[in-house]
Image (cartoon, rainbow, N blue to C red):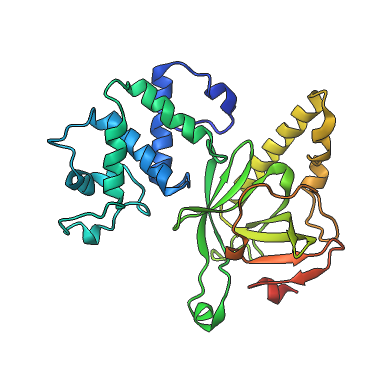
Length: 313
């Protein structure tokens, strides 16, 4: 399968007219949707599944395309966390809010006159609106917050996908298919760290990610540790896009971006708790309660630790 070049500008992709190229882009976007790499709302998964079904099945045929049909075939059109559990497919009825019923209704709404070309473009237009579209994906893990004794006993790291594109970095829960943290490059600083025990296969390299939030009316910085054998690749890709962003800002007559984008030495220096490289607060929806974070005030004092951070300070 072809893979989209993460370095290709999205604004140029959106101008592509060649049907063969659009078809390849659609195939990759569909794969990322079905595999949960592009998290979105259930209603959007249903909408995209209906478009995909129309492309692959043709116009609605009431003699073939029943609720039962989509109950049996929903694995082709919906990601696993959206579709009905396979353990209940033997039931003869479906509720009106079930995935297969909603998928069928969406499928029926598409007019017979709609062409595959237009439907693929519609599918891509939605995917283009996702902030993490076109990302390179890296496998990693983060520490799970400990809440109470039962959580401590069953404590395990959370597998995540780290998505990086020309806009920023996104930490995605690989099981629940939800964005835990999304940051534009001007909203965070980072540091790559080698494993403390080079010869230990269970000791992974990591990225420290630092960003600003407002907590109880005060500006504080949070630090997240992402473990991954691909951490150095993430680091190199972030460096490339940050340098690209710097170059663009220097070429523009409007210099307002210069205050948002740090120079390479500041952005990629060792993680110093007494300074915050970015003054911009994250604008994307984040789920900080699901993350194990260290918290520092504006003077660089550690005022909160979770998980293994509690051992470090």
